[in-house]
Amino acid sequence: MKTVVESALLPTYPPTRVEFVDGDGMWLTDSAGRRYLDFASGIAVVGLGHRHPAPLAAAHAQLDRIWHASNLFASEPAPALAAKLSAKFGGAQVFLCNSGAEANEAALKYARKATGKPGVIALEQSFHGRTTGSLAVTGQPAKREAFEPLLPGPRFAVPNDVASLHAAASDDVGLVLVEPVLGEGGVIPLTPEFLEACAALAQELGALLAFDEVQTGVGRTGSFFAFEQLGVKPQLVTLAKGLANGLPIGALLVADDATGTFVPGDHGSTFGGNPVVCAAAGAVVDTIDDELLANVRTQGARLADGLRSLNGVTEVRGAGLLVGAVLDGPAQPVADAALDAGLVCLTSGPNVLRLAPPLVVGAAEVDSALETLTEVTSR
Ligand SMILES: *Cc1c(COP(=O)(O)O)cnc(C)c1O
Image 1: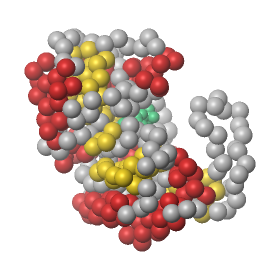
Image 2 (image 1 turned 90 degrees about the vertical axis):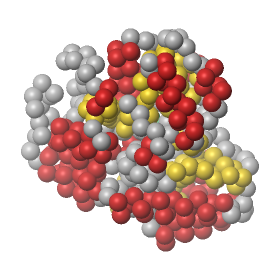
Image 3 (image 1 turned 180 degrees about the vertical axis):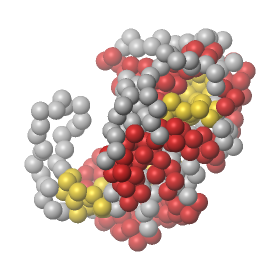
Image 4 (image 1 turned 90 degrees about the horizontal axis):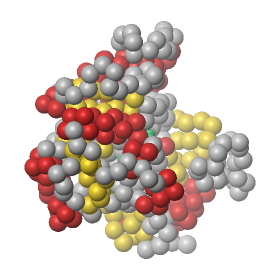
């Protein structure tokens, strides 16, 4: 348990003590045969739980037919997935890629060409990815500093502060980009009033409004898109993490009333729309029904209520099964102790413990996780 797993990988992640070799539903097994309850789902990725039969069967079937032929030719799974996402959104066209950062790059390029304006308003503490474009609009200076200069023009507003949003306004802004819940920046939900102000400002400036739903999308907050609960519908939405239950995928959705900008040659991706990945994603979208979304809301509330009574928790916030417990001290030691006790958790910023279990989690598993966390925080 205490030895660090060594490898020849570049050290872009902190050293790890655990190697997972097997997953089944809510459970992970490490190389020593020890079982862990998964309240991380990767980082809000494996939404249906490990080896869920629907995406597993769809990916297997596609693996046995064709893996890749390129976007120069038609293949059934990508347009089928796009049609499903369009139906969920209420009319959109979709660009498929391989990650959240790539989906946000596509949004940046789309807005630039659609409006002819390079400026972007994003939020302090936001996270949009690690590529140079998506990093440029990420509101965390520590992640950006070593790589500057990045894209010129981003302006950062304070989450839920309408005055600071208006202060960031400028005629050269072509994109307003926000996460409905800031997933990496401390699990901060944006208020409907603030999102309404974002929409009004985008319209006034002739900019597109984009929601980065890479973490909040695909059922995580209790609706397919988080925006459905917030009363504001953006022109652009990006998805990634939960969309293929662990296979790499990203998507940019462009609302029907904002399409028409990209033409052949404007954008592309060799692997984007991969048949195996899209087959899995199509099965994920089909599986996220009203019953599962109701479970996300019920178990999310149960988890949040339980966290409120833990030692050292000053605030609990989030939406559905994306829950942040603000601690009165650093969160990483709590996540580490929970891991030692057989519960996988995440952090979000220095003092927020983040929980994002698979959407299929049941009450007994929520209670078991709370029991472990009670034990760990009362030491
Ligand atoms: C994880 C994340 C990204 C980046 O996704 P990658 O697949 O790691 O590139 C972008 N935006 C949000 C909100 C995220 O949570």
